Amino acid sequence: EAGVTQFPSHSVIEKGQTVTLRCDPISGHDNLYWYRRVMGKEIKFLLHFVKESKQDESGMPNNRFLAERTGGTYSTLKVQPAELEDSGVYFCASSQARGAKLFFGSGTQLSVL
Amino acid sequence: GENVEQHPSTLSVQEGDSAVIKCTYSDSASNYFPWYKQELGKRPQLIIDIRSNVGEKKDQRIAVTLNKTAKHFSLHITETQPEDSAVYFCAAGNNDMRFGAGTRLTVKP
Image (cartoon, rainbow over all chains, first blue to last red; front, side, top):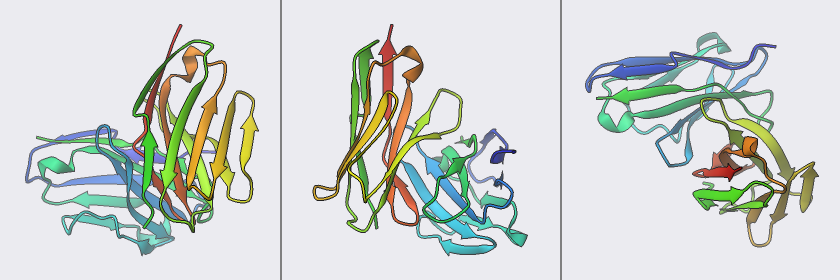
């Protein structure tokens, strides 16, 4: 069974540019989560999809962040325009049901210079 | 919402010693408490979890204890080995998990 995959693994961009991160969850997992970890801090919740619907987006920092999951399969997280404080590792995770075991992707290391 | 505090942030032990990582949570409705291990360059992976209807769970050298009254839970690793070196994250929640800041465990041979 393929795990959660994320692309790209690393991204280095300049302040003001746009970056789009992609996550492919495990097939059949309706629940998809985006998290971010800034060095030394918690894995911070960003948002949660159930199929194509945003169930909870209370963790999204501001309107520069836009997440989509068209068709309920893969998801994208776009940051536009990127700021220095957006740097960190962005993790995607999926689960079969809410409150069930989370399967993480390898993360995207985003560096905004 | 849920807030999870994790201590210590770093922990160094000698091979064979025990390691204990502690977490507290704020939301009394939380009923699921997983622990994830992230080795260098790899993704976080679930190593053990506990639900609120039990106080302790053990799997070989690792165990988790839960005190719902005090709202804290702990990870215990006995007979540590160098391959236990990693960052460990606790999490708490009901339907959606909130994570602690992680503990970097180093096991010295």
